[in-house]
Amino acid sequence: MSGDDLDALALLHDPVRRSLYEAVASGGGDVGRGEAAEAAGVSRALAGHHLDKLVEAGLLESGFRAQERKGPGSGRPAKVYRRAAGERSVSLPPRDYQALASVLADVVAVLGAEEQAEESARRAGKRLAGGRAMPVEDVLRERGYEPYREGGRLRLRNCPFHVLAEEQPLLVCSMNLALCQGLLDGLGDDPGRAELDPRPGECCVALSKINED
Image (tube, rainbow, N blue to C red; front, side, top):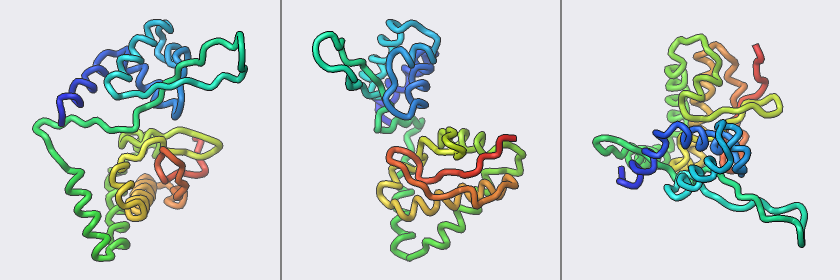
């Protein structure tokens, strides 16, 4: 944990800033000041002030949306915000589980134990279900996947294993898929709904055939 991480995350203690951050993060891309302000229930001016503070802290990134109309009278490009690509974490006292996870992933690759790793992930997914009777969408949200619905599918905006997935994409994505399948099985749902469907900037797993009940 660094002091910068702590200072940045402390900004989210303010309910307005937290609401604005969540509005931008859930947007899944570039979100305008007006959109964020409406979602948070504050004025554009107040939203702009807090959004820029979140940019300064490294929690958001900003840019400008290209104008459809060019030339004189087209106005200024609209400023937009998106979630920053970096990660922030706070642990007291400091812990480094990521380093150990990276070592273990290397061991699995060296030993060729991918099938055993997937089976362990599947069992872990069943344990996450915990015998509860609740929608898989709610459990995934608890685990940081940030699920959202699109075209009859449940997509996952965030990969909780992002850093490891960049180091060992085949292993981590296959384990992630097995984890989600185990979760579905533990919830009494169809494990086959979880499929690999990677999309840049999102989790590699998506769930098909959303149950609307």
